[in-house]
Image 1 (spheres, rainbow, N blue to C red):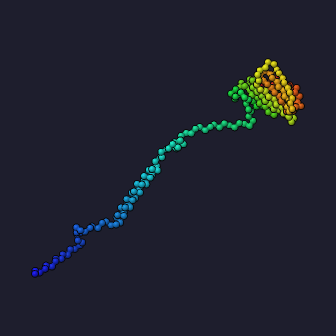
Image 2 (image 1 turned 90 degrees about the horizontal axis):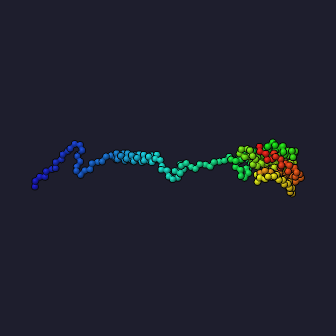
Length: 211
């Protein structure tokens, strides 16, 4: 039996080359975590940029916003308040054709005091034509002691001749005079006032005289 040859042993300095069945060691674990963090940071940065771009974009105005931005209807004009001492215009008179003059003309004041010396004149107004040449209507109020006196002038169908009517009721004494196209009514709340005084005042030309 031949002698067995002992196996040869070879000593090699350094690490041996890897064999075909050996697997090379991968990169260290901390390098993989670093790449993952970098990738997540990039994704977050891109997401933030998208959100900023969407926030800066103007929204599309819908019907409601378009309606609100459109100019609205003009606000109604507010008229100035009516003064407390304003005079109500008679029917058939508009401001374009009439002029309202507050107060009692001096000739009419003298006519009242001629018939009733102790009368206290309170208030009055005259409605004149727009050219101030003719009287449309007139109203004055006076006081006889504790009683009242009213002189009222209004338009009426024209008459050729002056007509006078006077009567006394349970609470009033009144005289009505028709002259030209006017109807003059003088009324006293004191039934003791003589009707002749009322007629005299109603017939005075100053009652229907223009200002």
